[in-house]
Length: 520
Image 1 (cartoon, one colour):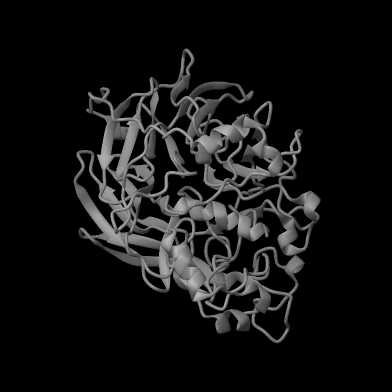
Image 2 (cartoon, rainbow, N blue to C red):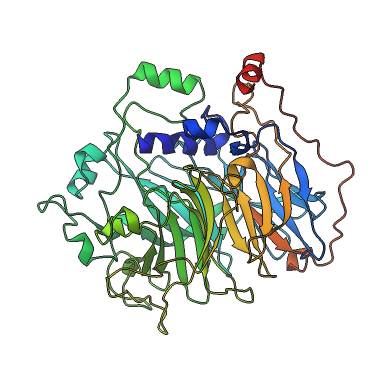
């Protein structure tokens, strides 16, 4: 049941074509201030303060090829236009934008997060690079990180057959007949205008362990190998459905590439990746495991498939993990810290907390009002002089508690059970993207909010048959947003004045009469 609820939210992320209902408890539905998707509330700039750090908000407009740059007064001062629905974007020093774009005809994969295409768009809107990585057995999804040399580290699915998964030690009741989607990280060197070369690869399949069947591959004691990932964490897969049911769901726009036997294929659902050039390490997040991980990039692709070699002598094994020690049999539910988290990032050099990690902890259970809530965590991982991470006496990775936490004072007003993110700003404040609501705000180290803006925009990309996508419930949602300081090299020599006219805001139609009656 838990897995099924997660799929509902993940499906909404893909292309705004999935008719997902809000993931809220019955108690939540009675609280109007628990409006997770932000329907019919004031939008645009809703709070500002004096002495703010000068800079801009950047994000991909939902259901649109547009990417907006917005000043502290809530005015759009620049826009980049792609040719597909945008998903995630990062600003380059030359003013170009590297984006993940939703490929219109990718095969096999679906549900929440795949996009299949990387693009580079110049400041003045020219398509500099357009690279597709979407095949029947592999596809980029969710997030990527641009290295200083211009190469791109991207999360990618890798589909394997059911029989192979069973031989690797996956429990049959946890394995969809269509075969699971494992994960890998590929490093892409852009070439030409539409090509790329895979120059490095890390595969999760090379670092699995299972304690279910001693006759299968990867057998061992989980508690003795925190450097490996359990292949049997998760829930039983949803039951196989009929082709008629598939046809109905696809016709409703609720299952791109859905088949009778691939529900439950997305085992780990990696949703964020970040690169630390100084350490030459990669951090990534798995919400299905409720853990964040660090691996060594200072290995060859061959070493990445093994358990030795590289700068830290561990090959491609996990250097550090945090959030849920139950996954390696060294804790119980009381030791769990993360709940479907997103957006793991190192705090960059020169910012307060440099070297620590930040993340958005989406779905923390049972707050003071007996309702789930969201938090922002800053972690100070136990890194040693060699760039490895020390285990505690209990054979778990610390810290026992986050170094810093942000929670809304009432817990009710800050909650996004999926997508979302956060990162540290140059002034020591933290920028937060409450994704489902399309809400962006800045908080001080003491937890005081000094600036708030809610996305008022939405595009009109249509389905292949010309029909509009369903606007509910993910009307204004934003997967990833970034605060960019005014002294960023991309803005050198550029005049950033408010566009005239400003883009047209999206007006949500009034609710049907029956909805009005329900709210009374």
